[in-house]
Image 1 (spheres, rainbow, N blue to C red):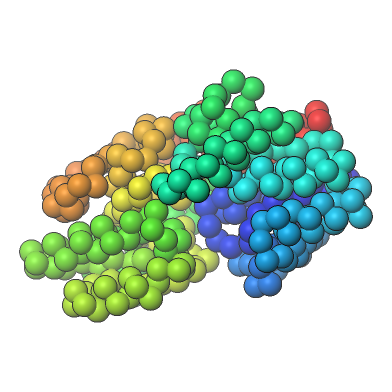
Image 2 (tube, rainbow, N blue to C red):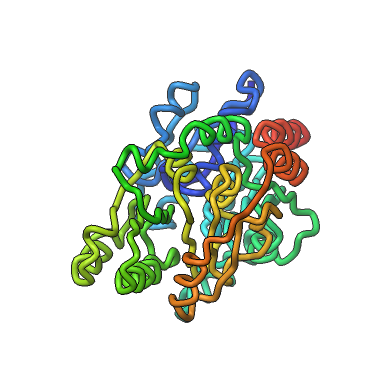
Amino acid sequence: MQRVLHIVSKMDRAGAETMLMNLYRHIDRSQFQFDFTNFTPDAGDYDDEILAMGGRIIPIIASNPASRMRVLMRFLRQHPEYRIVHSHMLLSNAFHLLAAKGAGVPHLISHSHNTSSGRSKLTGKLYERWSLITNRKVATYKIACGELAAKYLFGTTKEVWLLPNAVDINKMMAIADGMRNYIDETFNNKGLKLIQVGRLSDVKNHEFSLKIAELLKDRNIYFTLYIVGQGDLEDELRHQVQRSALTEQVIFLGVRTDITELMASADYMLMPSFHEGFPVVLVESQTVGLKALVSTQVSTEVDLGLGLVEFLPIDDPRTWVGALLDNKELECSKDKKIKILKSNGFDVSENAKKLAQVYKSL
């Protein structure tokens, strides 16, 4: 059995981390065991499950990236059993793969989960440029969640394995079938049910969703917006909800373990993001049959062809309100959904087998 070290900040319920856990649950752990770095002293949402499956949480605590690089290099030198390091932190992959290379690790995987770093200042752009060049030179194997994510981090899709953010299709569909009234029963809500899932950060553009909520309230539409996730902007967003007198219409749910149930019983998902890679939450939403309104800043490759995604510009929230109230009836049979998802690489059990083959080939 070979241990693979995955480089992440912390194993919380975020997009890349959820994708990684999906693979971890389905890979043959008699052949490959996953271990995970933790760059903070705080526990991650998935830590208990990881430990229960035989994985390890490796604390790499340092005050700055250079120090962290030294700590990681020292750890890897002390643990030569790690012959594969698989890094998931976009631009920071450069630091971590350099550390692994310095420690003599032969197989260095850089995995791209996003299409932009969001950096605009000169120092940020210089760092971005250095990191992109370093990633392309140092990585011995390249993986991306989609074409745009590959082109961003690696400059091309050539010699990049496109590994879609897959889900457990059958499990999610089985849960969804019995949970269409979950929100109504849990929150006693009979109105229009909206949901936004993701970390509470600038890139997710929650402020735009709150503008949509204001317009819906002005039109006397009975609705509730459920905001799922946590992040640095939570206090600011809560204050904005209070200032806009939306406390009865907007509910902050924090980190949840019932995402499938919530999505299966919602009417629409909102994703007005400024940029995304290939968000696993959109694979999940389409799997359970939830309609999604998505920013045109997000790659069209996230539309899986099920008729459940509508792209809208984020210049006017009134356009989004119009789409919400249009309430188009969409039909997509369960068999058709399964066929499309599996044929396009979104079955996590198959992807876990493919990832194991990649590890074996290294």
